[in-house]
Length: 272
Ligand SMILES: [Zn+2]
Image (tube, rainbow, N blue to C red; front, side):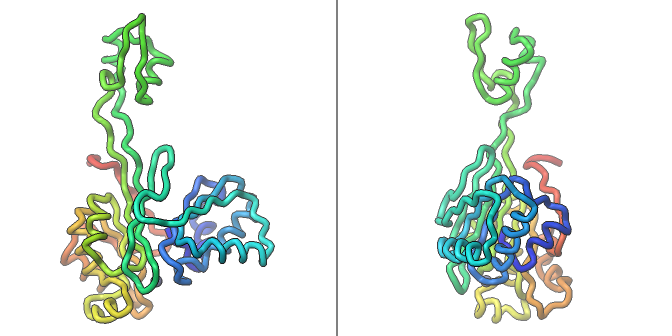
């Protein structure tokens, strides 16, 4: 999500892998959100990436990207699928989808919501045996949600599977003012990553520059019923994120301040 300057160095440093299945979501065309893209594409090509790369971004990015790749003679070793962002579902995969909503920033800007699709419930082998369904191919079909026929009798997955398991969702605001529309867009996300450029003391600057304060980020998380909040995009005027974190904690409990290399587990909904 976004590709700031030095993105490729971070990829290498944290061992994220340059040939993995990957999706890049760009929120808006400010340098600190896109300057790392060309470097990342070049590093991927140098490490002989072969898998297709999908980029979702404001449509204007495409011309700049293609032109720069050409002028620098980067010679991409993989296919790039470019998707111009629009409101609603922008991309569907076999087990996920990505939705976008308009953010409120000084230029055309977007927020993203990455969602795993619900998974079939847990398979109960005892039930399958009791129904006389033989182990093997028929079991795996049922596990994948397909009906099977045994000796002329039809069995459907609901007879042997537990309740459907909801997928996880991650919301990312990009640079934005808080809004009711974003509260609705991020409803119930497991993880919300939100613009937290300023502290409450500098609330006037947040309004003027179309960013959010830590308290406003926490307010969105609280109203949206997010499970966890990550504050990010801190102004260089703060040497430490402590005061921003303190601000946010007054409104929303489960909050952390992002830093390079931060790793978080996102447990499936309902897990304890
Ligand atoms: Zn910006």
